[in-house]
Length: 133
Image 1 (cartoon, rainbow, N blue to C red):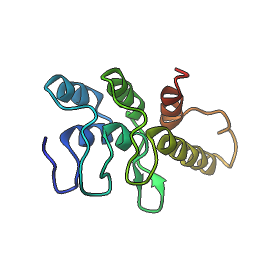
Image 2 (image 1 turned 135 degrees about the horizontal axis):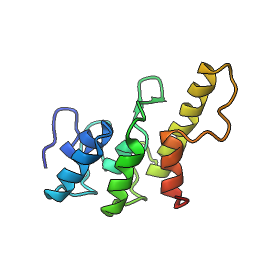
Image 3 (image 1 turned 135 degrees about the vertical axis):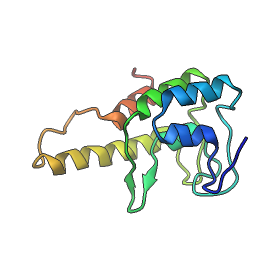
């Protein structure tokens, strides 16, 4: 596995970018779904940990586009839901945190209303990791 200067594998980079077709191609080509890395901000994490809530500077989640479809591919390939990353959180906990920020950002952009019950990408990811969908 390639472990670049950011401390991410190619699978993690594709997952982080929301590229589900690339993730599937990498898995079909032999990438290990639960490959971990030993350095960087995602040490001990897997591609599912990365996609479940890539939190950027300031504690807010990164862009969510494509994360639910990537997680679906990873879970179908047997990704472990219980792997704890360096932040001490499992993918579900990371996704719940990111979903909270996603909802707050939606409210902020819409006058504080209309976000309750809204399932954005991270909200869908939370439901997938909980086995609801």
